[in-house]
View 1: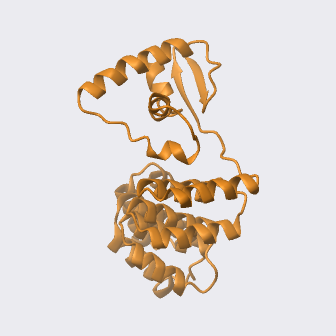
View 2: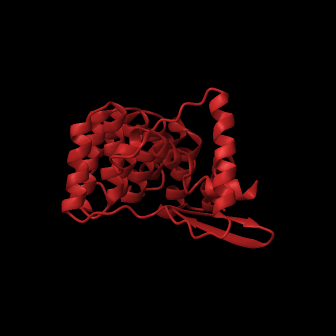
Length: 246
């Protein structure tokens, strides 16, 4: 139940169940604390996270494992405490996992800490050179601050090493039928109507003052016209189900 609540963002309920467990003298396990710390991370309960992390060893004599440290990294990163994340990583009794470094990379990207993002991305790539995500996240950060030489360098690294992004995928149920959309796949039978709807909505949001941020498109698509870049930004695989559902 704790894991279920935590996975669905119901951190308060998850922690309440944990406290009831402890009151009834039901001993939590290492896995229990993974769910508890995850609940803290998804609800921004930094102080509670620290308290439960210490409680593991002080009261229940459970030594933190990689999964617990990863949860703490995620918790601190989401709260913008990237400096504390770095200290935690440096204090770990063993090397952090790819997930730990990826959590730091996401936090650094969210809060604009380029130095830590570069360090985290390098560690991710050393552990898993075929993973495209660190390349792409770092390239997007460079693009935001107009560091185009670094963007080009990352694209070259990806090309030379044969690293490719996995296409995004999303879906929606309409009239008891599941419609699946994959990035850059235009085979859906209603694709023309979806594009027509997007163009109509695009005009309306521009009239309302929206200005598309097309800088990230240059990370992967060179030589495109401005309107083509706007199309890529607007018609993302995550948006397609929404167009169909409307």
